[in-house]
Image 1 (tube, helix red, strand yellow):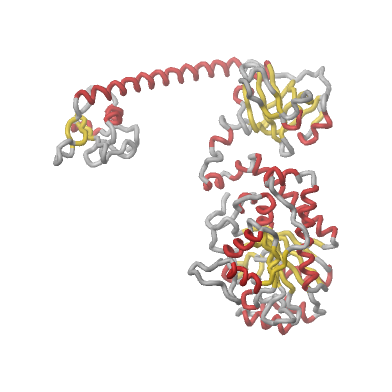
Image 2 (cartoon, one colour):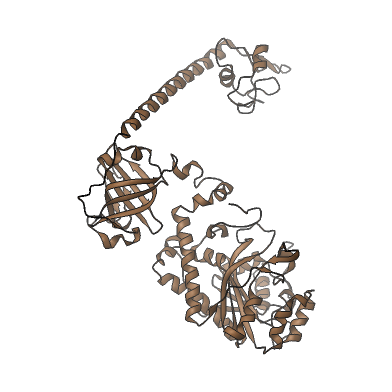
Length: 573
């Protein structure tokens, strides 16, 4: 039974039960078994006088219910009557307002906006280019980001076109047409008008006499568009995006409506910076003489372990979504030299943490004829140069808007061997869940690794991991065959963002790696051939773009830096 329904069985019996101890006004139905909590709710359900008998908690020890006292009923009845008057008044006012609005809309339909052809032709511009068009007539396409009406003859629109925001002012008939009255946030429009610079001293804000004292509206860019004509292109429902979500909405509601969330200012800034960062990586590689390649994402080999593979039926054969493009990049070295790719990788990890995704953007590179120290230098150069390019770009200011305390990393990074990290954990009493210490040969999980990184509070290049905890393709250290020439780059706040190593370039050592990891080498014949036909020392790495973005922009959760995040139990929209 819904809240507004009348329980006819109860009224037929002529009694409604309430209980301050056991009742509930939301879930109760007024029966002895499911009483309401209050007498007022009982009267609401009855709906009209005379009321049926209303019972309350019994005062005697063995009496569950007793009839409510007349004085008690009389007192509550007054509240019920007042509620009724308010409800009638509210309903009447709503009807009057609806009638008035319908009349206004009907009158507004008679107003037809016509462009004044005596005005200069309007030049189409993007909002970001507005500073070059002060005191000129322009036209701008965009979406209504914010809307504020001041009486019948003044409306302010904050227009959004993807390149920026522009305050636009509509006056007189422009505010009174049918389209103006039904206009809502997220509607798409075309606005014509003159772009005017704000008076000195008021840059960035417009103070209006029509507003309350101290109130103000933002005027992005220090100018505004005085509109002389406009057209409605696509009308949004009343209330705009607020109809389906807001910042207080549950995270699953926000993710279900991610297509609307990305219209928000902060989310849009993050996604724009993602584009800037990807371009910075490409510019870095181009400046260093790398070629970009596009490896396949449908594969029949594993790189990081079979337990995290997404398997699929590929025309009757078993195939996987790629975990890494590393092996394919290595095949390009003899023909192209230094190579890189920016591609999607997939991990079927049963993890729903703030740093794990099932699909992520992988920045990977491979370099021939280098040694371990040169390899580490290249990784260090990648991070410092990309950050420098981002900060020097036209959008670099967004980094500090989203992460005011950001400090660019400086060379040289702290280089710490795995064995020293084990000692650090012991010295700083960072233990396993059972209280025991991590020992040599054990993998250092995410939490202790991050705790160490956050305590040191600077980038760390964690080097030379034991052979038994690293992948089959990693080269062994010449001075100690129990260790690999490997590195994990750890950053405060996010932990590991880069994993890499020198690669096994000796065929026998590579085959030993397959055996050690219980991998059938047959499907890897093409990879093994690289060691037969002109092998060479080489190394490479993979960087998780989303983790890099979290660090750069100080985002708490990795899903914040994805267009449409994919993780455990989330594959929509």
